[in-house]
Image (cartoon, rainbow, N blue to C red; front, side, top):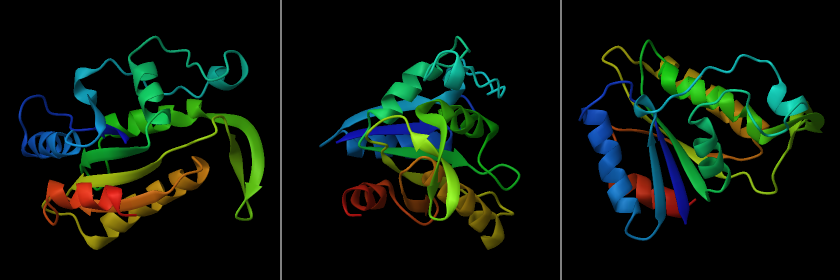
Amino acid sequence: MNITILNGDPENGDTDFSLWIEKLAKLYEIDNNVKVFRLSDMQLQYCIGCWTCWWETPGICIHKDDAPEIFSAVINADFFIFASPLIAGFTTALLKKITDRLIVLIHPYMIVKQGESHHRKRYDNNPDFGLILQKEAETDEEDLQIVKDIYDRLSVNFHSKLRFMKLTDQHQPEDIVYATHHF
């Protein structure tokens, strides 16, 4: 399998979260091709909603940064993971930044799906994904449900499925590897 991990830890260095993700990546590498993007080490701009990637240069973002490497890895993955410590009850701004930029991978044209309007697929295969979160001391079930609901909605627009949401304090990397291969 081709697996892509988007590590949204904003801290540089060996944080508990990034070490957890590194352990996960090493386990995946036993039987898979793995690409890990530590977003804090990359030059990434915010989506400005200009729609250039839809109308002027279809599938190509106006920003000249490191995001195209991520776009290619995500759309060519068999599975990918959004990974983030929670900050103020949500994923980090770094992970949200690239999540918003993934809009380049779908068409501006609309279809009706599940009784709602959604963007058409740009590519034949959009990979399913997982969500790995590290809770804050104040994280409650409502915070987790909000994050899950938003990524569930993203999966509908992305024409894929959120296969799991796992918490680093409740699961070991081995659990994630198992969950990835046993949908």
